[in-house]
Image (tube, rainbow, N blue to C red):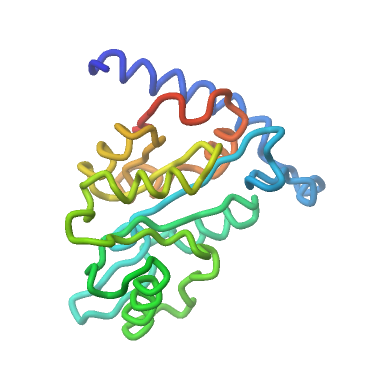
Length: 213
């Protein structure tokens, strides 16, 4: 895909999402009728799953090695939770931390929680077993392995990837993710949740990549 075609695709996607998002933002009286977009409850209308990088995308490590949420991260996760949109992590950790994703995720939680300084606990329960980490050093991002495994786990759902690193956003986009470069100055810190929810209502999930930027 050349740059001109890529820009046209992104703008068409934004227009489509904007139209759908205008219809999908609930009023206060309709808050209890927010449509679910999970695989189990949303197959008829489609579904979407949102993956994140962790460091400097959702959490920040300060000079004193304390760890806390990036600005807006807790609120973004809460808004996704309110719409029943499943989330996951695709993050590099040492492969020596365990022989399974679950073992490496447990070690990751231990490391983060040890230095956690935010007054709000990190929302580990939102991610469930959707924490993808390298099985070998060769699988570390920007190698495609983690994104491929995460996309397979999402089944028929459209997949979104948000990270602060351009190289990762480009790599994920090449694999069919809708991507967003997070935490940029003068831009929304994260892809607005009404637009993410609208993705579930677009046809042909995962048919082509698009970068919202």
